[in-house]
Length: 220
Ligand SMILES: [Zn+2]
Figure 1 (cartoon, rainbow, N blue to C red):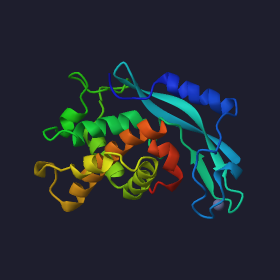
Figure 2 (cartoon, rainbow, N blue to C red; figure 1 turned 30 degrees about the vertical axis):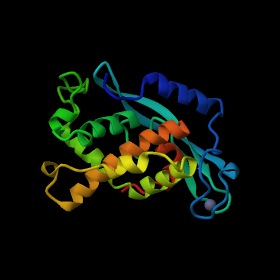
Figure 3 (cartoon, rainbow, N blue to C red; figure 1 turned 90 degrees about the vertical axis):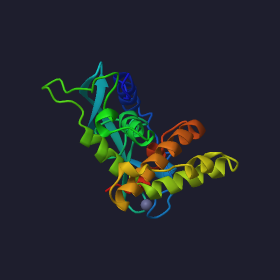
C-alpha cells in the first residue's frame, strides 16, 4: 500500500466542515498579537484540491478548508486537517512517507524511493508516474522547516522531559553519497529529523505537527 490519505479521510473532514465541527481551539495563539485561538472567528471557506493514491493511481479529491481570522490584528490562518501539509497537494502521509523512504535508508535512491511493490503510483490521464524529482523537492521543503521542528521538539519535551527523542535525533547521520553540497546535507538531515519528530508528535499529541503548528510554519 502506498502511503496516502484516503478518500474516506477527506470526506470525513468535509463533513466536519459542513457541520461546523472545525474549531480554532487546538491552534496556538496568534503569532502576531498573541490573542488566544479560542477567540478566532471563521473568516472564509476555501476549496482545496488534494492528490491521493487509490489502487496505485493518483487521483484528485476536493475538500473545503476553514480560514480563521484573529480579532486582534485581522491576520488570517488556514486550519489544516491532519492529512494536509500547507501549500502541498499531495497528502501528509504521501509526502512524509515517500520522503522517509529515502532519508531513512542509507542505500536508497530517488528512483527506488517512489516505488511501492515494484511500481510507482501513476497518473490516470497518461503514462506518467510519481517522479523521483518530486521526492527530492519534498525533502527540500521538509528539510527547511527547522523552526517548526524546534517548536515541535520543545512541545514534546515539555510533555515528556524523559523522552528518548533527543537520543534518536542525535543518531542521525547523512551518508556522504547522498549529497554534494553542505546545503543538501542540511536539508536531508532536517527532513530526517522532521520524520522522527512527526512520529513522536503523532503518538504524544494524536495529531500532526502541521495541524498544530501550521500557522507558524515558515514555508518557502
Ligand atoms: Zn492577531
